[in-house]
Image (cartoon, rainbow, N blue to C red; front, side, top):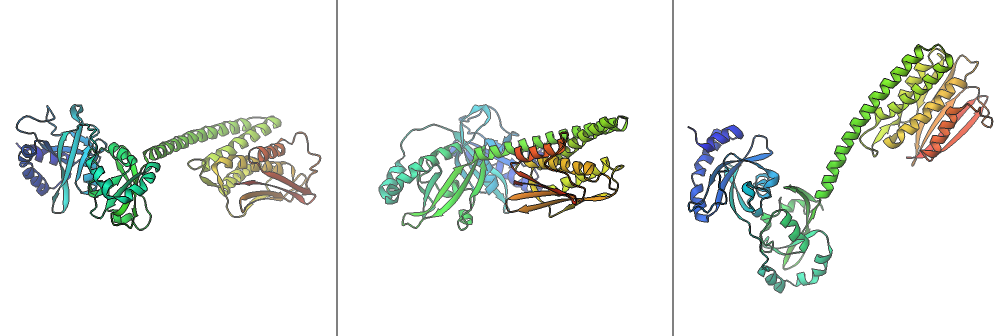
Amino acid sequence: MKETTISLCEKFTDLTEKEILFLEKYSKKLQALSDAHQLDVFIDCRSLTGRTAIVVAEAKPSNGNSLYTKSLIGMLVSWQNEPAVDRSFRLGVPTTGVKAYSVPEEMSVVQNVFPLFFKGKMLAALIYEKKFKETNEPSKKREKCNDNSNLVKNVNWLFCNVPEAVLLVDHNEKIFECNEAAKILYKQLGYVDDLQGMSTSNIIPEIIEEIADNDHWGEVTSGNIVYQYKKVNIKSNVTKYALIVKDITQLRNLEKEQKLHLVEMSEFRHRIKNNLQFLCGFLNNKRENETNKEIQTVLCDISAKINTIEAGLEEEGYGYCSKVSLSNVLKRIREKVHSDFMNDTNSIQIEITGRDVKISAEKISSVALIVNELLRNAMKHAFNGRKSGKITINQEKIIMLTKITIADNGTGFDPHNIRQDAAGLKLAQTIVREKLGGEIEIETDIKGTVISFNFIE
């Protein structure tokens, strides 16, 4: 029968035969290590999924002083539950004095983790575990540092008033002072030993020099906590640099919730769009089978409005901060109008001009409805008694304003004597004022009509 370590590694990891044999040989040393330190000792390997580790070897003190009543061999370990193991696997460095978030048998355990390398590759983590004991004893290191550091006395007011964790590092890469925010943060990260006197290699997630010169914030996830850190060089006989750390877990969680919300909204819009397309098809079918001209006109107008709203949804991105192409929406409206007026106005051209303008998804539906109403009005009334004509839809960006113009070379009309049933123009005027907060201008004579509206984008 194969050794347990070999069997687990072959089944749950991507280690080679030589690498597995190395770990199996090393596992023979665990009992001696456990008895020497009187601690539970484990070897964990990264699983095939990369999202967990698996316990492939263990040893308990021979005198029976183990933390566990059962074997943990073969147990899968979540990175979030054991931040020390996670850190050592990610960085290939030792991590000591860090509390595990969750272990079997509801133990409060502190872990010291050391990478196991074979030919330069980290294969596994060697883990020592001891029971966590709360202590309220004052730090002697703090008293010593306070006596020898005039710098600390001068910046005590700063330590007390900044929300971020601040740690001062000496020229030996040791932490010699930190504020209360740092103690709280690193306690949340699982560190149980006093930060003062601790080597920076045990808490800094990467080579700090890499982020020193470009004012860059590094970011790390440890367990359920996401934090950023930055090095600030300080010229002092005592201090080499300050390390500023801030917890951004809540911010990242909100971002995840926002992304999920946007995905849900996108799916919701997609369902609405499909329903609107079905409704348009239903109304078009009813219109084709209807003999009453007035009812046909009403059905056509309703279908056009629904199609316009659906065109806006087709172009919407993820969220109201996104920008969508006005040209694409205008083309959809033109296609629908051409289709609806094909038999009555075969010789009327509709041209879209101007450079494409990007409009926020929040406003695109309102803009589309206005253009639809003005365009259909022109198709219905501007060319009475004429066999041909041209309508131009122009878009332009003027600093912060977006301006859209619908011009035709039709017969014109009296803007002071608008028909009572001119619902399309009145609707357009209302949407411009109420929804876009813009202005609408009308110029018309016997040579044609130019209607333009603008709004702040």
